[in-house]
Length: 498
Image 1 (tube, rainbow, N blue to C red):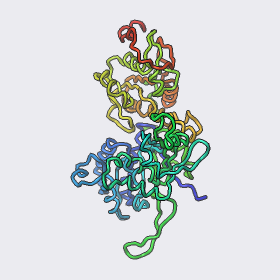
Image 2 (image 1 turned 135 degrees about the vertical axis):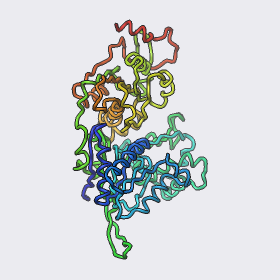
Image 3 (image 1 turned 90 degrees about the horizontal axis):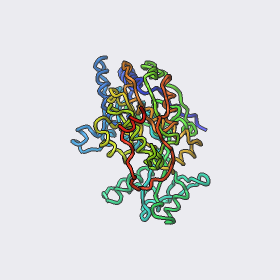
Image 4 (image 1 turned 90 degrees about the vertical axis):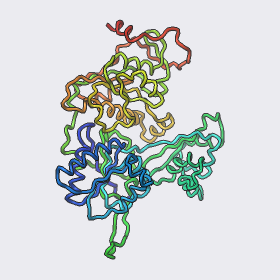
């Protein structure tokens, strides 16, 4: 067995300044040791925020190292007629060992790179923990053969199979992925083909479900092509070295991997990456310099925080659509949560996290005092003037995808902590809780007991309790029948509570 690959970590709380610290470390290394660093961010907003900070740091210190941001909002992307990936490739082709620099790109683009040119020249810093378990779901009950003809299954037990290729299958999928003729059908299939052929992913299927699609058994609506990918450590380069000739004609050797990889993020120890990658010959070690100058190592604002939850049942999209009885009226569980927000926040401003399929109506209902958070809320500072938050979003993965992750991690609680509870924490930390000078009380509404318990674990001294509602919690299916009487208004509920 080869020696484990070491990845360095910065497990720091949200708002503690890990990005701030990493930027200063990278720029100092660029100026004093000619280190080249690429920082990978979850969003363009975060890049723009970090880029502005980096420019100020360089100016304050009198450094001259190059700082470059490359993303789709830049004017030059449209003016030059090149894609973001092509601009990054062009930038990397100019890289030399003689000049330190800092490059900033998005995670979405970084994960499209099958091969990073000369990775040994670069240190890679992931500003947040990468998504290592994306899924693909597409409805192809009749035309699945446009993809499945090129695939074969490699069983990995009784339930799941790894996706491989028949002879010539990978070449056919490459043609679909690249789609040089701009075929409209291949345009739809291209993202799936790109994932399947990308060597940084291994992709799996539920064998029974895949065979239903393949053999057209069962109802058409149940024959959806669903695949589960696992990001491999090779995203940061391969093990081994290669021989090459330097410009002066001398022979030399270079690593096929990044010089150093640093992954930052709150709750690293509960992440899927931390759970899964050790089995792929990876070991983790805290970075010895980034993170030594953080603003805090534990939250001291717990006395400002009140957490209220509504349901004992785990929150999910399915449960949100089912019905319970509130004040004797049958309403959907999502409506219960929405009415709770209405009562708790009244007219006070609040931020909220919600699934895309519900955002339009909720935005209309709370247009005066609600501000929607992006579904990737990491790192944003633009909401810290707000003192209230609500979590209405449910886990986005399908039940089949969650089942696969449970199979890999051997625990449903581990999956829920990694996917949902970490997002709850990040969303709540967009509020004034990240402002060390704030003293205002912060109210948070979360859907279920487990979310409340997980969130309270970050904030010593906070209060956490179940909402005092006249609620009979059930999982009765929604009938679609109009209620004989409407649920009580907020004013009626206020009188009842008093």
